[in-house]
Image (tube, rainbow, N blue to C red; front, top):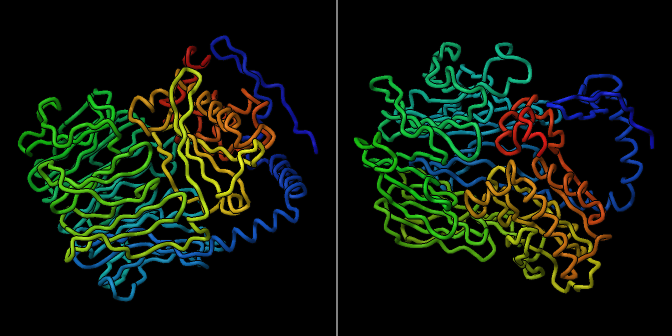
Length: 586
């Protein structure tokens, strides 16, 4: 193995000397860096591409050749959805004119570029279904261009809107235009800030997007994350703006007067707004660690949030998501990190429950507030997503699609076990393995974690790991602090000055698996990506004796310079600001 060059670079930040010998590798266009990458790849392939690699690779290719579907969205008897067929690289957008009719292809990214690197990042159907706005990006850059398709004629409109990374789009009820979020145009902001500087615009169909006027965002922080929603009559536009995952501001844009009015500002809580015909709803963790839903009449929505009435009270378990239909509110709770869905009417009365299997997760509800019909998905460690439809005629939940599974559920066990972390906190962990496992202390085991950004690790089908579990490997998922599984306090218990709790929880999970004879240090590997990549890198440094293999995928590991690059400035809320001496030391 060749040696990687080191340079004598030492930064002095607030009196702390920090060496950075590999900074030269940040320039991916440097010929020397390209050569280094090639050598790394050649070494990796020489070590890993053996007979076992090809066995697993072939098996994965077979397992992944299945059709996958999004939940259909019902729009006045038509159904919009995406599907990726077994031999396709990318999902295709379709519409059906009825449940049993033939699908019509609206946009197919396959074949658009060599390597099939064009992808649909998001899509939003207009109120009547006559149009769909969809964001397309290439090569994984996520900097989408919005295209608009007339779904009746299947003709694409001439206007295209560039630089709309994961745009929030909300159509007017008369389909004449939509509000959307857009990043700064290329060359108008400093380098590395192209993914920031988001603003809210309105686009009228048939006009030049270059003439779209900003509605919200002027003079705002460059790291704003903006989300938009619309009242049923199109007169009020809800605008949520935040720079982190723990609080946001909320405004109402009144179209009749072209004015922007605040609803909530300066409150360290999360708020999202939903408009119904006769009331406005707020989903919030304000004075409610596990979230609740408040309501006000339209004429009262500018009153202080403490004056709003409670529609759905806080419960001892997390109110994770909710969706509205014409007469119902469908509420997902996380009960020990598994989904349960309760049904309320628009006055907040509980009227039913959707049956879900044990150890399963809700895989999104597709509904519209002017439709009674809705679809929802369910998945588990035991099975990939199954899509159900609420049948209006029978008031029952009917299976309408299921994604093919390469395993038999009856062959497997799921266990949820609780262990004690370093400071005495009880933490849950899912353990998934094939029946017949002997607790002999030497089973090959993978431990997965994330622990950040309020993200929940609930049960999900792990198609990529089927070759591992089919051969007797154990897969464990630890629900460590920094995630949102148990509300706001669980998230804040694993960020900034509390970040070490995340690492301690994960180390304790590994020690528990060993103490319970699932595995030992010589058979234990850990894996995580992004924030989870930081997690496994950090615990690998802190406890190298505990793990034999570490897979750190797209990690954040430069805790000193990360805010200098793109959207990473937003992550300071999770980790701290390296320019603040106390944060830097932490």
